[in-house]
Length: 322
Ligand code: ASP
Image 1 (cartoon, helix red, strand yellow):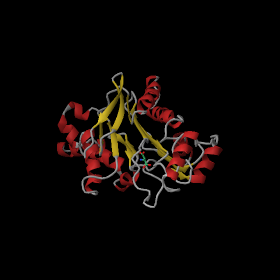
Image 2 (cartoon, rainbow, N blue to C red):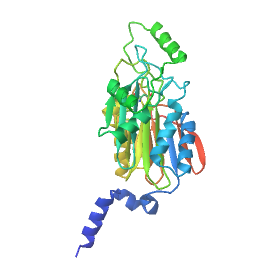
Image 3 (tube, rainbow, N blue to C red):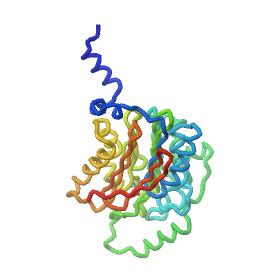
């Protein structure tokens, strides 16, 4: 007969629920609220959340919802940091990075993709119609075209003007240093079945070196989703997020029992510790735990996230840690 101690040990290991949650009592081990939740980065997240919640309310999956949500800023020509209308690289090319993950741990991603308006949908196709996780550049575009995506010119007049102004203002001290205009969308959802999904999509840092890829298409950096624990997403200086595998770290901290808010903070402190406690750049994380509890944190003031929960879709200001 299996001993009680062995039973508890094996049950805990199999369920992957952190021991700290078990200790925390009923709320700590609740696996799902049954109520849909959407959380996303920045003020344009409000509109994205609305689109995602519509999908969840008709009973569709968290995966369908994250895709529908981030397609809103991707398709908006006024949005300088995502998809169509995104600011170009130093050579005037709009290059897009996106990734998506579902509740079964499947992942798809595209990077350095040009002339395709909805990179998130290409990332989803990579996940669903290939045996790969990540496609880049010309190969990603070819894959998109054979799956019926259309080529578009993504450089709007407004973005081209911004690029020309940047070029005209260049001087001998310019060295592709931090550009603090961040506006990547990371969006995480939980559907009524309690399943989680995440998406992250961006045109990356404005005026970056041609060929630069940020954190946003990198699974575990720009976004990560583990249906047993929670999901996390990033915005801000991608290089710092990549070097600390930020979103994966946030999820792993939640697995260890940290509250979503604390997990976001601790992951940022990892970055801050490598920059004398006060980096010159912004990074922010959002997190959604399996029980529907959310969190967010940022290195600097100015970060906002949008949360749609219990029938309310609200924008929240986050006070920076530095
Ligand atoms: N994380 C994005 C990148 O580094 C930038 C951003 O969030 O604005 O490409």
